[in-house]
Image (cartoon, rainbow, N blue to C red; front, side, top):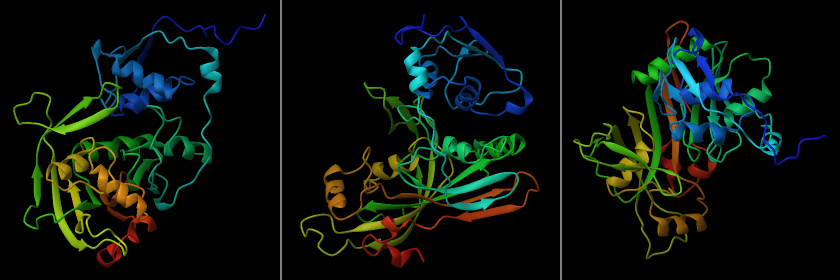
Length: 334
């Protein structure tokens, strides 16, 4: 007799995984996404956040790096049959390629596309690329970008390359510079923002970040270097009573904290235009009417050492048209 959709699919009471050498240095969430085939990504992130996943008998975060020999305990996973069957497959999709060889791939990610599935998103760049390139044995994210941010995204094609690239990001030996358009006149002399950040969750479970004090035990030191590229005038027809001055900034991050640039710039009194979490919401409504319907944050330049031969790779992703064409932005980014 067929099993009703409301019944559960049997699963082991508890699952244990021992991290192998090829997975050394991988993020916990990526490791579980690979090992727990068929389990929705939202469920995997839920059991990590709740502390049910144990790494060497201790709680761990999604971005914790696992090491060879680590033992992971995963709780019983019992999901409605319909939940498993209804999980949509990621459509195959390619993205503009900025660099590619046998070890790695760099693409220009559009805004509005998540880098991976989870937290209410069924799939992202990495799942779509895996569908588009089934012949590639290992495609893994070397770092992250916010869903609303466009620009350079680095992906490994070999596990050995992944470990080497992740080491560079962890040791802060890469160079990551973003373009951001902010409200008002950012002071030319304010070149360093060294303010610790604290992550927290809203009542609905959504992630947020705020500035904190150096003595906060949960605060993380965060450093952003800011350079003013130019003062941007709004487009024709902009309301006379509204904010009239904007600054185009090149922001190089020395630490890679969640929402770091967005919170640092907003804390300085100059939020990124179009930012729906930390921005000026009244201004954002005017921006939307003027044709700017996304956050103006773009992963512009990335430098790193090639994971195989060690040579310096320097990549640049041009501003997408929807950003370049707003006001007189193009005058400062040629």
